[in-house]
Length: 227
Image 1 (cartoon, one colour):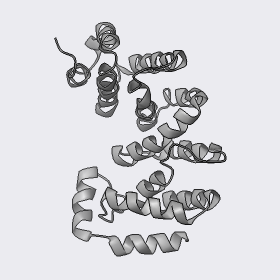
Image 2 (cartoon, rainbow, N blue to C red):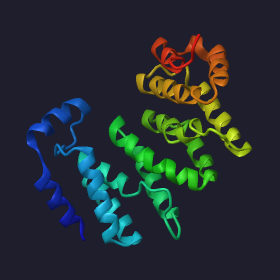
Image 3 (cartoon, rainbow, N blue to C red):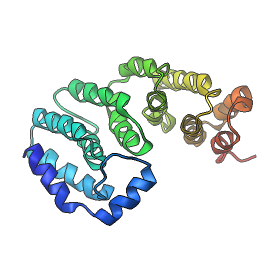
Image 4 (cartoon, rainbow, N blue to C red):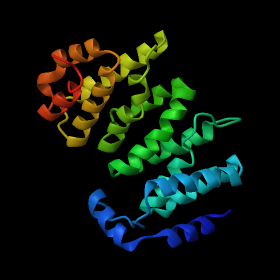
């Protein structure tokens, strides 16, 4: 299976009417084919079964370089799995290399979903993610929160996981005076998800930083906490 095979398959699945609406929704000037995400998910499973890991990584790079809305989502989905054997270093490096290209939430979130699997596999990569928090690129800063969402969902976190959780909360605290909508939304999202497991910690974060947050983000953070 080659990149040309995949591009031909995508072109055959294109829906021009849906493409117009999707381009408007995602506010992108990038080419959009109008293919639904579940279709891309099914394609990614078929491709993974048909190629080696090295071939898959090459396809991912080529799909990203094609710079079409759906090819970038498909590239991310080809790496969305809990285990990549024998070594996932090249997959992580490829995912991280895409972060500076982020320019919208949809592609960014699909890449972060794949990236979080690689972080869970090797939490030491959090050190690299921390560098994103001081990037001048808003989408890179946002990615540091989105890619670490698994640490909000742990019911029985270990000591090392709690340390990462606190580390990310420190990042969120450093973001609160950045009133970009997507940054504020990411803060609210991270805190809302954490509130399902540790509402007290979210409340203490709001006590410390809430007045600096945009009202909608503060409301989102507290949405699941009963007064």
